[in-house]
Image 1: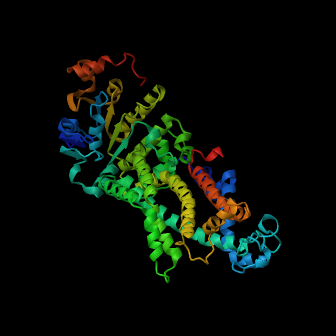
Image 2 (image 1 turned 90 degrees about the horizontal axis):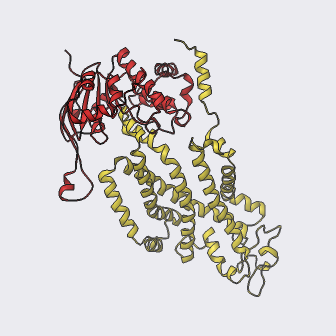
Image 3 (image 1 turned 45 degrees about the horizontal axis):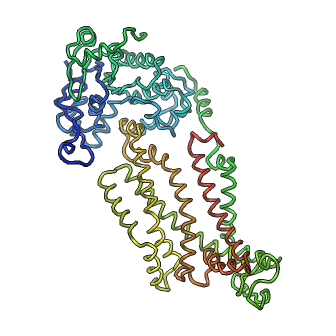
Length: 262
Length: 314
């Protein structure tokens, strides 16, 4: 079996809190000794309540957050040892989709500029035909190239954000709550799009969400986080059927019975 | 491949918002008006020798025959306006006011523009760096700016200008000295704004694509700071014009025989207090007003035009 696309070993992140002495000076431990891995081609769902450290943990995979201790190996490389250029090269292979597309897309750039900048970041140029093909792969027409973010809906924008993530043909996509800022009606569309990408292109996913129903349908495995620790991991169905940890049970019970349309 | 080269050409055509920035600026009423208000005095200043020759005057000849021998106020209406002297003459000396003003625009605007360009450019570079790198740079630059705030700048300028050797060009020294004290407030404002932009999600998203620092600054941050820089520039112009005026008033500005709008204004003060010749202040004052108001209008319109979200709200 090949090496996991992402392997985190005993990672912690302590945020220093501004000012203060005594207890305040120790800072806030957002991630506390977590180990997890994502196999190639696998979709791992990371669930937890807000403030449980799941976004911080996800951002360690591409070096946006530097862990206080522990090691992160992404795509076979120790992220802490990469240096600036190595980190930029890593981010070719590890793309990211953020929560709110209206915030994560520059309001002053057209879709074309946003996509072109991804190629420019790695000294590459691209053709209109390639960009059109990229948009088509996320279900958008060529007419979106000239649009600004305020000229498209949230669901369409999140497709643009997915196109940006796909531009450099990554092996791993970190999706940080990719649907929680969207209308319920378009959530399923975006989730289906991500699931298709995993199945058809073999892209691995680290899918962060607070919604276990979403995770259950679109992840192979689930890791449940609470207060900076992973309290339970296992295959999605199993976690859903017989949750062991009280936190998981609470999340499962909070999930509405009705399932998302597939 | 389901698209032909024709459709790609169509896509590119449909994308182009066509009109360049200047065209859109001129189509906005406030932009066009502001630009005209700014450019007319500017051109007049640039063409000062030509205009004065057309008028048939020069900025130094004293026309004492046009003055009231008792008190020295200009004879005739509007401060002595006539076909020979388009804006009348200066009281007491009788020199041509139009010539004084157009030559004054030259020196005043050269100094104000020079100082504003230098100080705002430096503030933009430093502020952007503060916003992007934060950390120790923010701390160090912040303390330096605090120090500059506490420093008696005007006293320093007066002292420097008083000891400038006569062979040095006073205009250039003024530009440098004004720029030296002009960058602090804009740098702090730009730094705060750049920090806010740096914290926005699309900057993190760009970082996550592997964009190098320069690309993030150039493509993601600067477009969001441009409007602020333009407005700060427009706002710093009138301040510099008035400081030059004040220094001239104190006798440490430009040389006494160099025409200067600020000097004209300060010289005119007693004449407007007594009401003897209000036109002496109104004409140069109107020119300063045009420049300052025009710069503000044009700067504001330019910011709107450059922001795609307000582009269509003209």
